[in-house]
Image (tube, rainbow, N blue to C red):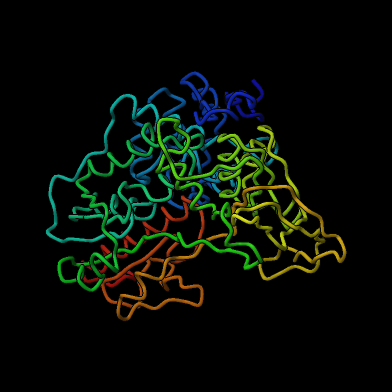
Length: 463
């Protein structure tokens, strides 16, 4: 075995998986996991932990895998993470824990994410549950949103003895884990539902169909609860503002994925109100764009990703772009739509695009795309999916007195512990940062739990 090379992970054949919604990656079996764990150097100054937003003791759990003690490995992970099977599948490990791995200097980093997934799946299959605290401390906390930030905050507080209730606007808990990430990347019943059950096993209650700001307001929650955490995410889509954008057949990626996931458009037994399209353009280059493109492909469409920058600037994970191309999705890079054409019945009937070139760097450090004069061309499409990012829905902030937001309508919260401008109210995840990753939302939820604990113990959020 070459210690500088990862143990390969088995996957569905691209031509087969492009026609189904079954999970793409099969993950490690025990022998493969033990072999991969053997590559870990068990560093004393473990930089991989620094790269993990929830600070999992990575060398410790990998050591237990190496020794074949999978249950103990799961206990170590569960001390830091409430959603290990989720993180093992969707975290951008290459830029976080694995990006810090010493093995990666001369070869390939240890496959930390795949090992976490293996441990979490083994624990689920062997019915290993987290242990609820024996005693409650008499304090109550309300958590708004059951996505990764809310579930993590709730789980951490429950471990500390707090009585926690999550309020979820939709009919099914899980937030973006349920409605935003496709089944082929994150199985809903086999993985997400089981992770949520583990959080509930800690004593957390979940109330669905409760829209904070309409059903009940934050100020009303504060009359019943000692503190409130807002982890409501960023589900309000952005559009380009171009002609034809209101045509039938133009979707936000959020809408397209939600209809596919929650309303089961992928299941022929469900009559879901979605027209998957025959020729689909997905505008954008992030992970959500890849999810929408790969979903449309599986629903039977010919799919082209349209992105205004070059391949080097694609914000999506390299793995997701690679999988999309393997499955047959085309990429029209350095290209930007300028107009969507509409037929006499109000449906999309093509799109005008213009070629772009990269100019000077923008505020983020990426080179700004500039239109190339006279380079317009027509793209033959009948469906357009806009994946240009999202922002928080202002419903909660606009109905909560004394809660500060910034110009992007994101809730203002201090970074270390999530304290907002309103006493007793904390916030974290996409509601504060705008659209980001699952693991960053989890890190914010964990930090806010510490802040709430400090606040309710009278120590202040600074602890």
